[in-house]
Image 1 (spheres, helix red, strand yellow):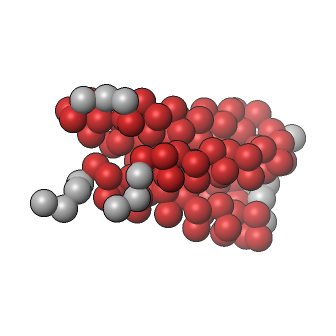
Image 2 (cartoon, rainbow, N blue to C red):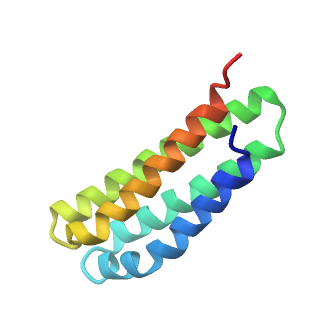
Image 3 (cartoon, rainbow, N blue to C red):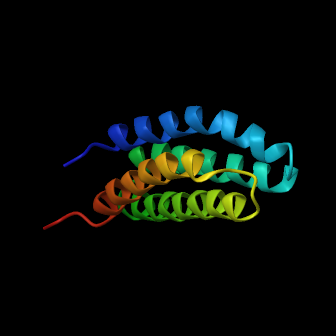
Length: 112
């Protein structure tokens, strides 16, 4: 089973890769760029909070992180649809976000 730290490390890595992408979006759509920045930050912050929470709060924070992962992915797809980003910028980030989503889902729903 992956540790919460592994998924948190991946989320932070994604943020570092998003920095130049957010700047490209910001040049055309400041609100969408802020949304990407906030949702990506939310992934990492909720994962970190989940790691130090009791079982009930842990699951809630993991679900919030999962929702923020999907929000970030959707925002990148919206940026692509508006023509702010090309597929070459979006596809690798989507793959990494899919990995975060899968890892987070497994943490929120451990096998018994």
